[in-house]
Amino acid sequence: MIAETVCSAVSAAGLGIAIVTAYRKRYLAAVRIAAYSLVPIGLVMTGVVEWLADTAFSPTAWAGFGVLGVAWVLFMTTRAVERRRGGTRKERRGAAREAGGSDAVAPAAAAPSLGQGTRPAARPAPASRGDDDFSDIEAILKKHGI
Image (cartoon, rainbow, N blue to C red; front, side):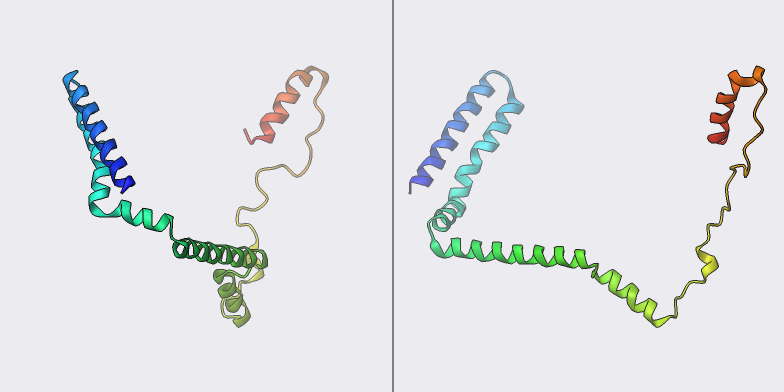
């Protein structure tokens, strides 16, 4: 009963603020305030407020929330243990395929297809004294493949 009275008062105050806002020629804001102020009275009329009040003071409802919490904790614990073991469904399926041997991969298929890259096999000969200024820059450019 008190919750319904409070919701009605909040709605009435919100509608009053919406009227003052509309008087100041801010119609869009006034309509938005009116919409927000109608929500509490709508909740009272649909019975949601009564249901929430009954739920808040019901030991059975709180026990139900506790059971849901325990179920959630158990579910998350099993997920964490499964991840630590590496026993996800996908990994078990992959292990079963590998055990069958039908999808085996040839050893040469694991080698990179691009080869060694553009890196030279041996270091270039040291540059002369006159090229010392550019040797560092040249080394950096070669390192980046430029």
